[in-house]
Structure formats: C-alpha cells, structure tokens
Length: 391
Image 1 (cartoon, rainbow, N blue to C red):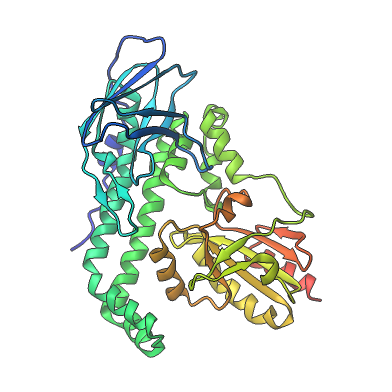
Image 2 (tube, rainbow, N blue to C red):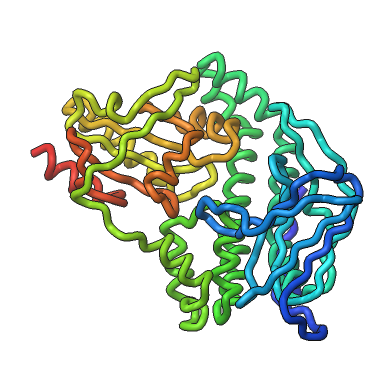
C-alpha cells in the first residue's frame, strides 16, 4: 500500500484560522463535565513546554465535575491531565467561558499505572483551542502513519528483535538485506522525511505569530540543531513572543565551557547504577552525548562518532551516550540497530534536565577533571578538537 501524499490543499486547510466570536470575559472559567473520573480525582493544567514544569493549576473532581478559574495576561498552551496517570489533552487557556466534556475509561498499563485517553475530550468555547487542535492534527496524521508501519512490518521487526537478542550478526545482516529489510528501511526514511516536511510546513505557515514557535515546541520533545533555520525564518513578532523566546533559549543556550560539569548517576540495561565520575576514571577526555532514537541528526552523527572512537579510544577517549527516549523499547531498538560500542544509558534520573539540555543532539566534551573543554562539536569540528587534544 502506498502512502498518500499530503496535498497542498490539505495543508492549507490545516493552517486556516477558525472563524467565530464570543463575548469578552474578565478572566477564564474552564469547566469539566467528564464521565468516568471518580470524585476526589485531581485534574491539573501543566504548561506546554520542554522544561520540567510544575502544574499551573490543580483542582478536584466533585460530583463528576471540576472547574478552573483565573485570569490570563495572554493565551497560553496547556496539557490537561489527570494527576499520576498517563495521557493528556492539549488546549489553549484564554479569558473565556470554556467547557471540557466527554467520557473516559481507565486503562491499566503494564507498569501498574493507569492511563486515560484524554485526547478524545471535546473543548468548547475556545476559538484558540480549536485552532490549536487543527494545527496539532499534523501530529495525529504522523501517529497514524507510524502505527501503520508498525503493523505492516510487525513480523519483520519480531525477527530482527530475535536476531539482536541472540546476537546473531549473520542473521541481522541477512534480514537487513532482505526485501522486507529494504522495504522497512525505505518506510522509515519516508516517515522521518514526512515528519520534517509536514512540521516545517506548519511552522512556516504560522511564522508571523506566536503559533509558529508554539508549534515547534508542541510537535517535539526537544528541539534539534537543524531547527535553527526554522527559528531564524520567524518574524520579529513571533521571535519576541513568549514562545519565540522559549525557542531561542532552547536553541541558543548559554555556553558552559571552562566549568566543572555536575556528577550524575545512571543505570545500565541490567539495572546497575553507574556514576559519571566512575565512567571518566582512567580517561583523558569523555564526550557526553545526549541523543534520541527519533532524532535524525543524532543518528546521522553516529558513523562519525564510531570513526573517532576507533581512532582515540585506546588513547584515553570515551563516549557516554544518554538517550532521552521516553520509551525504553525505542531506545533498545535503536541501540541494536546502531551497534554502539561505548557505554549507553537511558535518562531515567533527569540527567538532561540537570545539564539543561534544550535540544538533541547535545554534546559536552570534558577532561579528566570533569571540566568542559568543548560543547556541541560535531563532524569535522569534533574531529579537529580531538586531534588538537591528543597531539
């Protein structure tokens, strides 16, 4: 089955501002009437952001209903969520009479937690939330495409996973070179290309207002280096907006060279706890590499890192890769696909937040004393730096 092309007409429809008006209100009232939430349940509003945000507001379900009230200086994007449960519903909080309605069913997850399909809830009385939903539909389309590929290649992925678990390199090579392997690789290439293309179209179509930078944040978990041109293409008004400033802070963080980096502890795949201070023992230089399985620039850099690792590892060079993937399975799958020969960890202890990582890939080069001697060096720049240090 061939993937349908995204027509210009569909994109235009995605961008259009919903028309409508409503009476002005001195503040906001967000009422919830949701079937399936027990009395006493805490419902929260958490800012849409790449930072670790505390809840903006918290309320309790009483007689199947809840309400948030207050006043906004300007509209802001929030996640509506149930405390200590998975799932959220994005909305724009504006000074208006708003209502959230729907029916939720609690679902038990494998880790013992509970999830709710809050994305199915309806938001009324907020034109800005309607527009936000329209723009976010791009992500919904990509989620469906990802699920389609997962179903289509389920049998192949299962065989590949088994080959990785048994460390059968011959079988892995055979699968990659098979018709299904080539089809899977092509499907992944198309998928990631579609992500870049569609997200870019949405952001550029809204580059003259806060919607542009807001969508850069809403579409991603972290901003990557190759999104800097997107930011530079924004209008002055968009850059000066609240979300424009957030994007700038993330893409252009303050430098840290010359400072001693904080120590941290992470767990390897077996659950063993390891500290950075231990990982750099006996090493002259360590590259701390923050990445993710879904990050194209991160994975494009891996061949260069492998080359430099082979060249300098015996001279005292180490790489410590820390994935910000939210799902352990995604991280493990990428590890097996890439065959990384250096220490790898999943960030389950907030290391990225500790290091104020704002986008991936982010790389920090430190010396034996833990002092940062280089940041965000890649490709030829990293090769030249290591050549200079190991002369």
